[in-house]
Amino acid sequence: MRLYTYRYKGEIRVGRGEGDSIVPICGITDMKELIGCNFEDLWYDSPVKLDSVELLAPIPEPDRDMICLGINYVEHGEEAARYNKEAFLRERPHAIYFSKRINYAVAPFGEIDPHSDIVDKLDYECELAAVISRDAKNISAEDAYKYIFGYTVINDVSARNLQTAHKQWYFGKSLDGFTPMGPCIVTADEFEQPPRLALKSYVNGELRQSSNTEYMVFDLAHVISELSAGMTLKAGTIIATGTPAGVGMGFDPPRFLNPGDEVICEIENIGRIINRVGK
Image (cartoon, rainbow, N blue to C red; front, side, top):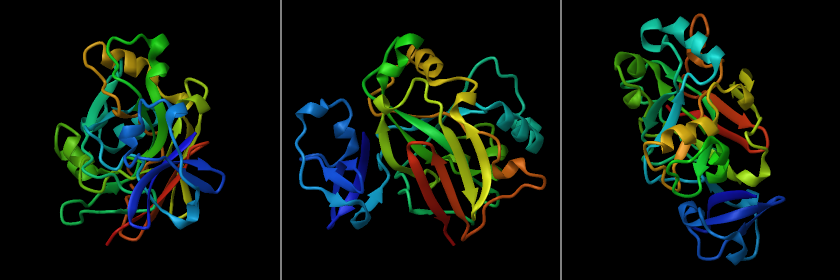
């Protein structure tokens, strides 16, 4: 099932996709209210055409910071180390976790704020993100996928100059407007587990990233099991699974984003988000 958050005639609604239409879910105005619901108990309104609504990020205002995986594709780790060994070169016997603040997630066709006053190395990262369906504590790897509500696409926009200047990545990843998300959440039952999905990004129409989620170093079963051994993953938690090679800092010389650039991030069977860098 494809689930959308959208604005129609001034109202924010949540609905399920059906062909070229969205079927509004009665009484639901926030995707977070839908997580954990029994879909058989829901009521629906009359469908509206997809092209008549303004799509918003599926979860515009998450309740907590996104959990992110760093250097979770081997080739991305290699390109990152070439760019800055001190910041990125490290042994990887364990997953690298960091958090990303999302005050308000950028809509799937919204604008990326470049923060040009403090950012001079703006980069993109196409990633698969998973949304936790119910509180998860002490979950085995075998049971981990039972705790995933669905999947979406994010662009983990990154200020490389800030990311490398600080020992932690939080500031360089968390500026306002640095998390485009969407275009929808596709429920987990639509995928094999773990999902093996083609992932691509384009800048101004040029293919930059092309990989598959099967090449993650640490899959979601490992991540959910490991994290839930020490913390409760609350329903609605978003986990971003890392990005493959092909980001701007990986080129020689680096190819960072500029105002006016268009970035497309797409993942097979979920969709694409298209975001332009603002002035």
